Image 1 (cartoon, rainbow, N blue to C red):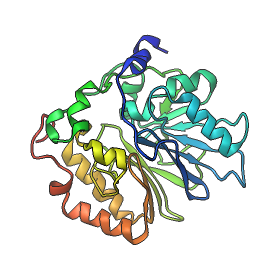
Image 2 (spheres, rainbow, N blue to C red):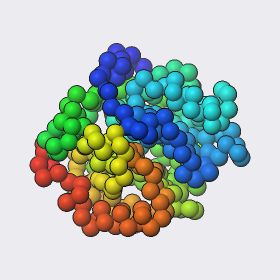
Image 3 (cartoon, rainbow, N blue to C red):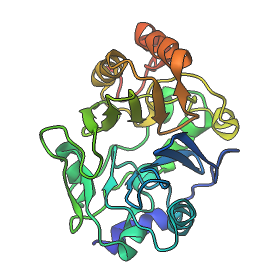
Length: 282
């Protein structure tokens, strides 16, 4: 592992948090959403039925101890996941993965198109401050955009759409926000872990992030580099008719609130999600 690359996360100025930080909620008995500062990670597994579970995404830098403590409170002392599934590799979704993997000898799975950013071969494009007037968007060029090297652990997701250690779930290719972004869907109860394909907070606004004001939104604008693909991904997820959704940022949505808002996002994507201008806007 390239410790020099990973140490850049530790040196980054990342003061943002929210009123939801440190709070977890069982969206379903086996789907636990935990907020780490401004981003959500998910534990998939029912602690009343099994000691086995999977961690989806790994939160912000410097959160490894907090994440480990949260896991042990939910699954017991010494508990570690069977695997880590990454929706994508942006800093707020892999911020603590290197530190966690120092203690956990477990596999990590991501889409093959995301692997260059997870094996130290490629960096993400920098954040674009011109996509929105919000303070988070303006700060985005300061956010880490470098790739990390976890090549000793990471491997591509199975090509048949199954998700290792997550029976009944399938991964859905939802690029746009990043080249290899994926979401996770379970047909049985129509549960969706959307990552940043869409979110339920206006992520560009510091006030909205701090207060976690719930509103349907597209992927975070400052990091989204392919808006045509992002729109197709939102349409793909809406077509699944999810009844429960945990997104990478914001409060989970369910039922009619989710279906109505997701349809509205599809119908008004250019107005709600896509910025009027920016370096990654066609």
